Length: 72
Figure 1 (cartoon, rainbow, N blue to C red):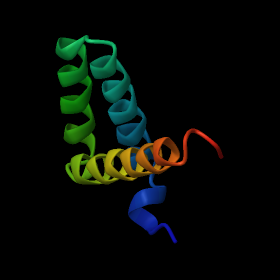
Figure 2: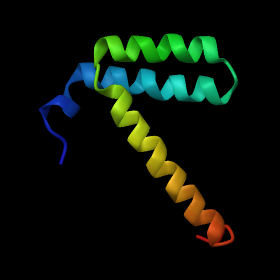
Figure 3: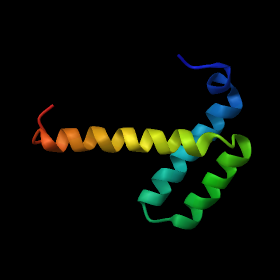
Figure 4: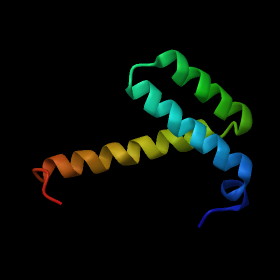
C-alpha cells in the first residue's frame, strides 16, 4: 500500500521525470537523461532508489519471460 509520500504530487512528478530519464537513456540521449534524473532527485531525493527497484523488477520479469520462450 502506498504511503502519503508516494501519493504526493511532488513524488508523482519526480516519478514521471525519472521514467522519462530512463526512456531518454534507453534512446541514447544520456545528457537529457541525466538532466531529467537530476530534476527528479531535486524534487524527491528518494526517487533514485525507487526507480532502481522498479528497473530491477522489470529486468526480472523480462528474464522470466525470456526463459519461458516468450510464451506468456
